[in-house]
Length: 96
Image (tube, rainbow, N blue to C red; front, side, top):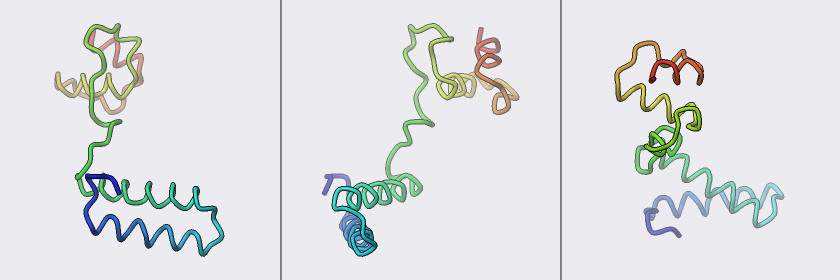
């Protein structure tokens, strides 16, 4: 059990894992599904960060080298209007 998991998370993990094993999944696959399920619930409850919706990338990197999500987060910090509908190229242009 990872240190960050609560007893409830561990119980949920065991329940999902047992359920997947009964469905005929392999041990490794059942563990993967159970772990992903628990982590998804932890993320939804705000108990773990969602890497995709954080970060603004390397501050020294060229804008074109950043991902669209990193550009979006930078645009959010600068309060650029209409950013949610912008493509990566449009975000790069707006941030320049």
